[in-house]
Image (cartoon, rainbow, N blue to C red; front, side, top):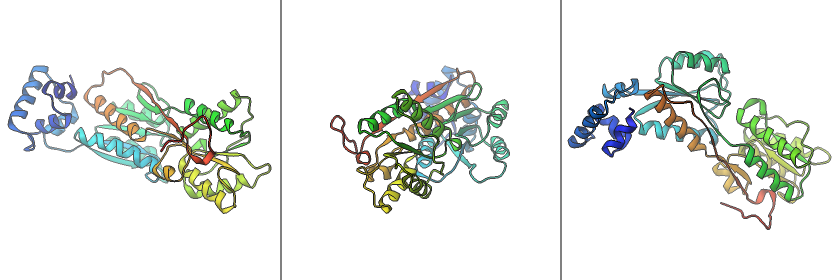
Length: 332
C-alpha cells in the first residue's frame, strides 16, 4: 500500500495525508483521525519519505539538470517542483554544466536525498548505474533508458515527420540544421528523426548539422554562417526555440524576409516563440517534470513496481515563420 491508496480511501489530497502523518496543525482533528484510521485499515507502512514527514523533518528529492539557464529547463523544473511540493518533498537541484567531475557531485547528492531524477546527458550511463546500484530510487527524463530504471521522454519521430511534411508542402528542398546533437539526447533524437523523415520523402538531408550551443547568440551566429552559403538554404531547422530566435535575428540583420527568403522553425514552444510567430514543435515541458516527480515518489514508496517507460506526445505548432498554407491553420 502507498500514500495514494490512503488519500483515496479518505477522499483527501496526498499533501493532506502527509500533513496528517506529521501531526500538522493545518489538518482538522476529524480529518487526521480518518487518515490514521485508513493507515491502520490498509496497513500502510510509511517509506523513508513518509517517516521523515511523520517526524516533522523535510524530505528531499534530487534532480540533476544539464543547465539551469533557458526557458525549457525552467519549465521542466517548475513541473517537477510543483508536484514534489504537493507530495511534501523539498527539491535539491544540481546543474552539471561547467562543473568539474559531475559524476562525483551526482554521487555526493545521492547520499543526501530520498530519490533522484536525472535529466539528459548530465552524467554517463555508468554513473547512473552506480546511483541505481546503491538502491537509490531513480527516474530518468529526456534521456535513453539505462538498465531497469523508469524513463520518461517526449516524442521526436511523429512531430519531426509532420514538420518535414509541412516544409516540403511549402516547396522547400534545401535545408540546414542548427544545433549540436552530441550535446543533448533530445537533440540527437530530433536530428535523427528530421533526417529520416527527409530520406523517406526522397529528399537529400544536409550533410551535417551546423553545431552550436542552444542559446540565442549561438543560433544567431550559426544562422549567419548557414545563410552565407551558396546555394542558400530555403529552410533552417533549429534544435530548439532559442536557436531559432537567434536565427530570426540573423535573417533580419542580413536583410532577409522570413518566410519569403528563408523559413525558420524551432522546437519546444517556449513563450517567446509565440510572440515571434515561430513555427515549432510544442513539448509538454511541465508534464515531463511532473511525471518524473510523481514516478519518483512512487519509487520511494515502493521498489516493487514494474519498470515504466513513457513517451509523451508533442504537437506541431504552425505559425508564420515558414509561410502560410491553405490546408493548415495557425495556432496561438
